[in-house]
Image (tube, rainbow, N blue to C red; front, side, top):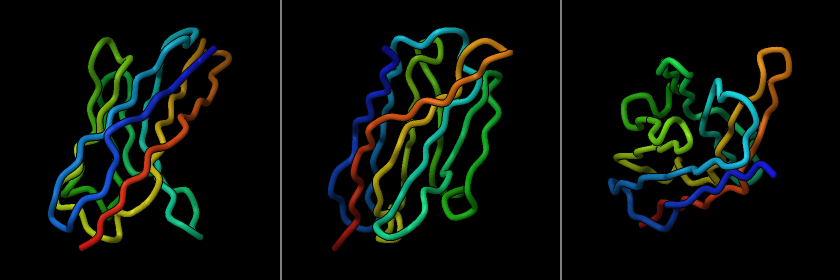
Length: 119
């Protein structure tokens, strides 16, 4: 079974930093894209950052200057370094992986990890 396990969330104060991690296992085929999404209470799930097989990254404008997405361990692990956290960053953060064979890519999601930024 494919599993994506997020970790690293927590309660922090404005200006603090967190480093989220996502460990993927059981994925068939190659991972093409990994990304982080977040969903605040009562709001849509939005893309935060993505990273492709060749290392290309994309960021939502709201986090571009503060967050950094990266991969390690042959793309089995993904990180999101979050600096200068603000209350507006409070959300459940989800790991997303697009993987499989070129003719049959599939979308996988983790269970989410809560990030709360409050003074």
